[in-house]
Image (cartoon, rainbow, N blue to C red; front, side, top):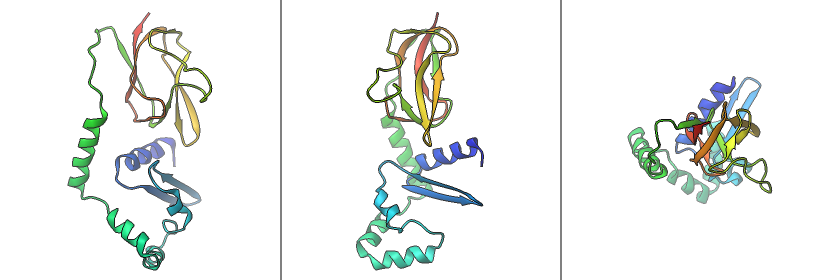
Length: 180
């Protein structure tokens, strides 16, 4: 499985109502768990295993877990689309009006946006900073791999559009910059 396929799977899980995904393909295994998902469910073994019979047996053994799973049934495609539209509308901040010479620096991949190299260090850039082509603007973390994002040319940072620790999508604008 290549990086592009993994990124597509990450986006699909992120956009879905499912809390986790366990994918096994040959000797490759990928387990994704959303931030709001209770890891105890994975550790309990309830969500592990390849057999739906195992899951059904474990569900019936614990009525409180069975009730929680029934409440968490996936929505129909139409209901999910409406939910995603509502969430997207709420998540998008009002667009600011920038001049024609401003450029958006976009996320090269889906992942978690970080403004600084570690929690106890300063941000890579602030609004108003002038950065060189190779200077790091932020990091995007995907599956414990940190990828630096640079401007590619000398620019002044006009606006920072993503929040530290936010999940960003491929091609999502992260910074508004002005070429120098």
